[in-house]
Length: 259
Image (cartoon, rainbow, N blue to C red):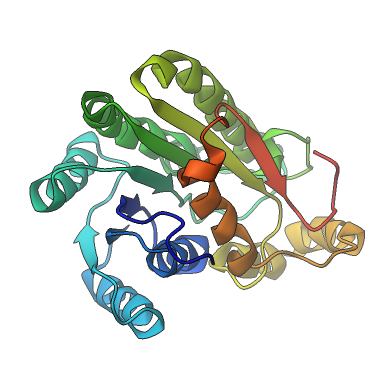
């Protein structure tokens, strides 16, 4: 990661106690962010994540705010916590989702619908509800949502997940049009299967989903991306180098598809 790429920025990275979120937080710290605020639901895991980033970038200003972003008030408390400590938020990177394995729709328990909707979509809306006004008041800011190629390409077992990821992508595109006048840019990173993540373990442990995604892995001629392959794009999109990029959904999938 290029030192100074996001120098002076205050970055909030959600769901950042592991996987893509943790790698992204570390990448912002390495790229010179003034402060990096991690988020998750578990304070103990948060402390470990902060220690991980500090070990990688000892000089970084890193902290953790606990909060379940599927709740509007909880999301507001996290955003306000950043504003209280630092006075602004320059970059929001929204990671996270739901811990529900892909399966055929007819085998999807309706009791899981709410967790899927909240994890994959409501949390994004909640964060943006609070962050957009703060960034608009500043006259600048970037929002990057980590979605999925499931929102672009129909995949068996991801009927509900894909629908929600598509909703997230369209939300990003439309929000970008609405807030551009305020100097705010909004983009989406769209991975497919990402190795070394809890999502990968969950998918590959399910008999149906493992069979589907084993085929996808064979198409990744460049190899499956890891969180370390996703994080640099999040930093780039928040940097001045991406000043003219907004409303985009950028796939990082090792060549699984040309989406």
